Length: 237
Image 1 (tube, rainbow, N blue to C red):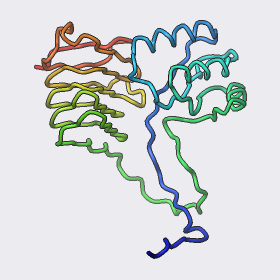
Image 2 (tube, rainbow, N blue to C red; image 1 turned 120 degrees about the horizontal axis):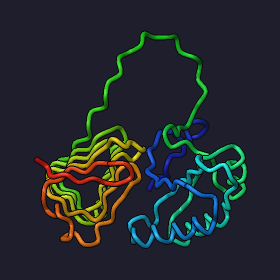
Image 3 (spheres, rainbow, N blue to C red; image 1 turned 180 degrees about the vertical axis):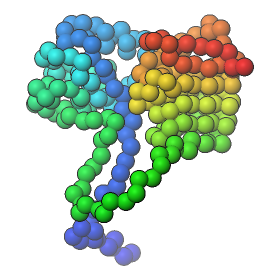
């Protein structure tokens, strides 16, 4: 058997872009007791849906110091994995002491310095085409549409997860998790021909469906969108 050929110099590695889905934990208080109590309540309501997810802590609305060590410990207790933070400069310095780098979810990129290109005429802005999936999604499968809408022509099975930065359209039964507006688009919506999910979320506002039969739109066509800080349901006409 021939030994694998190694590559030397710049060829020894490649730099490629990647998209990582993370949960964004938005803080509305600097009080550690309040934060930990709120986290316990949220995780009780969400069950195991967010366990083992990477988390970015967003403290941009908080001017006061944060107990980063206590918050990180609590997140790990709930099997959440903090990987970064968003916040003011002094908070970034404090968080870095506990291994949390500052990130920008809307424009996180690996940057390489290159010579400035010659200016070119501006091109018209075009909207990205939706991602269309025609096969059913089974338990354990996760699908992410990073550039806009996601259209599922078939079924989203129980235990499957679909995520889109734009809208989500499911033309069959929706039985798994559906997360629209993943980058914070509050105008995003979810359309399902047969509503029977485990969890739905739009721009961070989520609802865990513990008793599907109690929902008036159970197994019916429905449109879900945000109204303030609440999810609004309407029949699919």
